[in-house]
Length: 83
Image: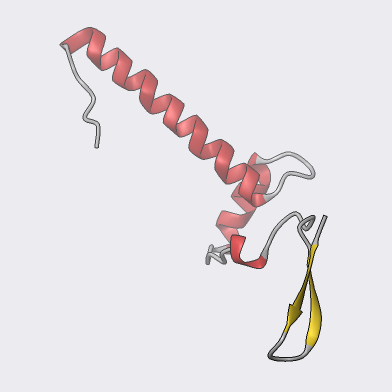
């Protein structure tokens, strides 16, 4: 449910919607080449947003790195650096 507040400077009531799914400040524009956009489309499913595709790629990459660190640790007593 939203919030109704009085703007005393402009002397009006303002409604703040809490149910909007995304606020404008939650979005950022990034420049990508058309080729990159097409690659993202081919990686995603119908109805999946670019944000969802990029997030799933980032998660898959993190999981890949964890597997590689584990393999290195098993072979060479390798320890991952934590920052």
